[in-house]
Structure formats: structure tokens, C-alpha cells
Image 1 (cartoon, rainbow, N blue to C red):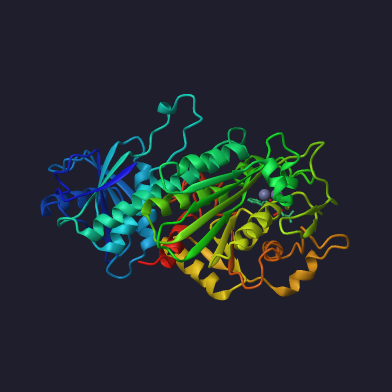
Image 2 (tube, rainbow, N blue to C red):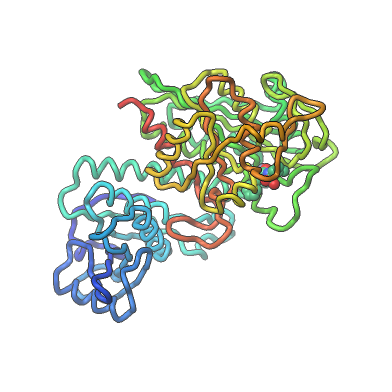
Length: 494
Ligand code: BES
Ligand code: MN
Ligand code: ZN
């Protein structure tokens, strides 16, 4: 999908469908917030919309055909609420996402876009992220309606440099989010740890990003006991991927780490059968790293960013780790594995320890870490924990600016004794109540004193098990990509 900018009149633009914004007016009235159509065309359009029961409510999508003088065969009115009263950028994005999804099967769509930077950005982002579907594993992909392939944003006056920059950036970000969605949606038999590593390498092959891959031998040599223990039950061996983007002159160093469990059966502490297929998405954090690294390097941000992907397949077998095993992690700490289904924290601990050796200014990890995250915050809101309040606020603010839903969460010290172990230094499970937080407390053990670190639990938001809504498709959502890119933008020197 490509987004472009143009200044042709909305009514005379050659396209399959034209999207216009619709607002409520007074109690029952309607008003178009658009440009490039005549008063007569507008009156006809409004009459048709009225007859079809459109209200202009935020997120509403109404299709109209046959408006004389408008070249597009279909005009789609997207409800945006009353913009004179309150502008909600997230709702504008969601509305555009709904419209673009409703137009799947259509090739070229024009949007009469608002020209103001923030509104244009929300419009472009919602449209670009709505144009997605995953058909790689359909024997005949032509049977499913293809997502819109070309979107033209129409602005009333010649495009400014700022508008061009916004559209260029959204193209990059949307491609990264969609790549991340593809990785999550890819079935687990097609995406073992070695495949994930190859995909990560491929995603940045044309970019100034150095990729290093640890195979099981290298992991053993370097003492990555957590990644090895989780991976030892699978015929598909584990991997660790390091992706380094270090533009000349950049001073700030950011490390980002993503959980890459390509399938989580739970291991010997096996999960129930119902819904286990969703555990193909247990590499959502890793997928966010791949997308973010691609976007950050493509945008050429002036900041050093290193991505880490610890990856394994968590399987039960004769070689799998057992509840009760004691393993030695990177850095030498020992962990008593009381539940093999708490595997994410084991692979992350090694990668966090390796990242910390390089003393970056900030480490952020994203992980589909706990079911407790969904219990606490629901399916759409990520939990953000940290060992430093300022860094946590920085990530939450970046998320808000990028349009992702994330919420600050504490790491209460009183939970620390719950991960005490009689046999090893610590155990891999703690208090079940506040399970999202005790997982964070476990990770914190692997962060050296003075190292700033933020942990994002994306168990819910990374995978949409219900129907599509707004610009969010069913399945992989690409959660955390936009936040990572926004953090990098905020920390980068101009
Ligand atoms: N990958 C799961 C967490 C998860 C659950 C992600 C549902 C997305 C949707 C994780 O590895 C896990 O199994 N966590 C356990 C931890 C428990 C054993 C302490 C959990 O949450 O039940
Ligand atoms: Mn698990
Ligand atoms: Zn898991």
C-alpha cells in the first residue's frame, strides 16, 4: 500500500472511491468537513446521507453512489464527530481505518483530507493501517478482497514540506507495523526461531543495520542459559538476534528487546488446548523490534538503536526442561524453574543482561508476558513498568503521541519475596495476584543498578482475537512498533 499527496479537486479526482468527513450539526443535521466539491454536489451528498440514516458520529461509515459531478463511483462518508467542539485524533484514525477496511477489494481511494498537520497525520495513519490483510497462506489469495493498494490524500492547497514529511513518515511506519502484523500472523510451523531470525535480517537487508545471530552453539558459549533452557524441548533450536543501527555522530544509545517465543505450549507445564493456537503470537514483542528497527533506520533517526530478539519454541518433550530444574542465566544468576509456562521472562533475562553490558541510556522491552496483563488492563491496553519513573513516563507519553494505548503500572517491592527460591537465587514465578507485576519484578533482577529500564507487557494488545475495529485488524496488531519509533524520535538529536 502506498500513500501519496495530491491537490486535485475531490470531485474530479480519478479514483474508485472518495472518502469525505461527516459531522453532526445540531440535533439531527449533518455537515460535511471536506473540500473540492461544489455546493450543489455537497447538498446532493448530504441529502443521500440523511436518507441513509447517517449521523456523523465518530467511526460511522456510510457509502453513497451516483452523485452527479463526483467522478468517484462511491463516496464514503466517515463520521468524525463535531470537530468544532472537540478533535479526537484517535477517533479520526479509527474512522479512516473503518472506511478503508470497508473498501477492501477497491484499488485506488482518494481522501479529502484536512490539511492541518495533526489532522492530516491521524487521517494518513488510520487509512494506512486500515489497508491490511493477511492472505499469505490462502491457496487462492484472489478469493479474499485485497486491501486498498493506493491511497491519495487530497489537500486543498499545494502540499507543504511539512505535509510531505508527514506522509513520507506514515508510509514508513505503516509498512513497519504491517510487517510486524505479518510476523505475528505467520503460523508457527512457518516461523521457528531460525525463521524469525532470518526474517529479522531480511527486513533490514537494504538498511545500515548490522545483524548478528546466535545459534544454539553460540548461545552455549556465551552462557545464555535462559534461552537455551526454554528452547531445549523443541526440535527447532533457539536463536538470539542483535540488530544494530548506529548512525555516525549519534550520541544517545537506546536498546530495545522483544520476547520471541515462536510458539508457547507452556512446555511441561502445558497450557489447556482451547485457544492455544493464539500462542503463535507469543513473538509479538520480537515482531515489534523488527518493525521498529526497520522504521528507525529507514527514517534515518539520529540515535543509536540496538534491537535484541531472544527466540525459542516452548515445547514439552523428553528433552524439555522440567518444573524444578535450576538453570544458570547470562551473568551467572541461578533460577529455579517452578513453571515452564513462565518462559518469556527466562529468554528476556538473558537478552536484558546482554543489553545492559553496553550501558545504554535506556533499555525498553516489549513482551507478551502474562495472562495477568489482560486480567488487569483488558485486551487493548498495554502495561508499562520501570525501575525509573521518568523513563516510564517517557514511554507512556510517546505511546500517547503515537496513538497506542499504554498505561503506567508499578513494580511493588513487597512482591520481591514472592520470587524467593529455597534452592536457587530466585524462582521464575511469584505471586499470582498481580502476576503482571511479579513478572516485571523478576525481570528487574537482571537489570544492573543505575541502568534505566522500562518493561511493556503487550499480552493483550499485540493480538486481536475478536473482530477488526478501526484500523486494527483481527490477529496481529503490530503493537509497540509506533511507540518504539516515537521514543527513538523523542530521544534523537535533531
Ligand atoms: N505467553 C504467555 C502469556 C500470554 C497469555 C500472552 C495470553 C498472551 C495471551 C506467557 O508465557 C505465560 O504463559 N505466562 C503465564 C505465567 C504464569 C505461569 C506465571 C501466565 O500468564 O499464565
Ligand atoms: Mn508461557
Ligand atoms: Zn509465553
